[in-house]
Amino acid sequence: MKFFALAATLLTASLALAAPSATSSAATPAGSQIRTDQDPVYHLYLQDIDGQPLLGPEASSGYFTISNTVQLNSATGGAPLFLNVNMTETTSYKSVSLDATATTTDWTMSGDTIVAGGQQNFVVCPISGSTNFDLFLQTGDDVPSSACTDWITIHLPCLC
Ligand SMILES: *[C@@H]1O[C@H](CO)[C@@H](O)[C@H](O)[C@H]1NC(C)=O
Image (cartoon, rainbow, N blue to C red; front, side, top):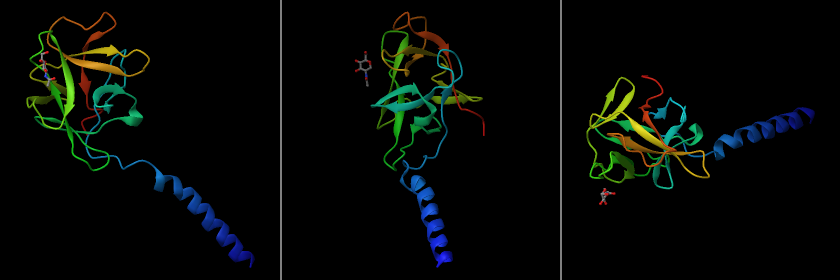
């Protein structure tokens, strides 16, 4: 009896330990993280926050497949989204968006640095009431506000 009681206790304990992983969020999708390595966005990670591509915590990082497009892979097996830059904007900082189709198809890598249309620098701007940052491709000297920081590059965490 004692043996069975112990076995039952161990089984219950192992089920209790196993339960959190069984109920945790969806599996990490394939692909690479994209992060920033400079202040004020040191080790923030590119991700979809309410439909916007923003720099935020690693725990909610997006995972991307990078070729001539930057594809955000779905954590739930849904359709991917594509990182696009609106080059028709007249300011030298250009908005980025996540869309169902890729309109920016001239992304390249330079080492571990992600480059769009030959531009590798971004302007990052704090978001009021949030620790996340907005980002814009930098093609000149304009910035959305004096709170923003330019000359920020975005990277793979490693070439691995
Ligand atoms: C791109 O920017 C232009 C100029 O501001 C705007 O008219 C257009 O709607 C934008 N395109 C997208 C897809 O947001």
